[in-house]
Length: 208
Figure 1 (cartoon, rainbow, N blue to C red):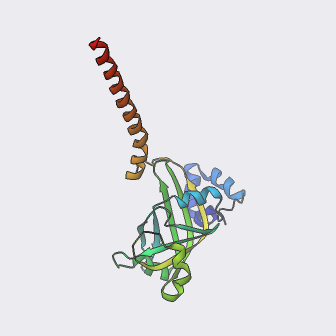
Figure 2: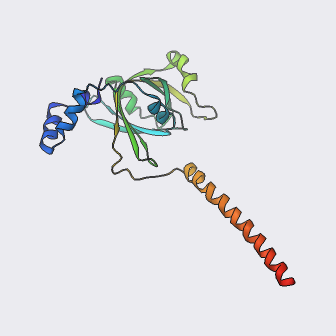
Figure 3: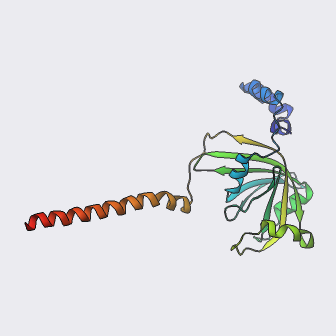
């Protein structure tokens, strides 16, 4: 299924026509590009994420956006159209869980800030708790991460789309900054050693 077929409602199409983008998106729809199966590119992108946002809708009709985070790789790619996450114990509001038990549709956005890339995903969520979660627990468990897993969420992907990089401000985690500084630190150490050697040579020359 294409992403546009799910989100380009008649009113959205009218707005696209008004502002001059309808022809571009209509051409994409006519090509019939299916976007419900991950390629290796998406799989690698997803495996490298340590957070994402997802939106659910409850019985009142209000959307609710929640941040989900964990160690890098906590979002598991089960196959080319299925994701799974461990629902770690949090503040016990259960808003997203309650919404998903009312309407299992979810919209997700995942951002790679340093590379200014974002992936949007639409899917339906299946929730497993208690004994039903048993066979999934080991699939989503993160070695060395002590958070308590209350349930497992299986996300059946219906469509995804890559967003343009406009207006994404590059941001870096502490780990990414440390990695970036490692080369600088090595260069600084080399320069200090070089300066020390030059100082010794200069001292020897003055002694003669």
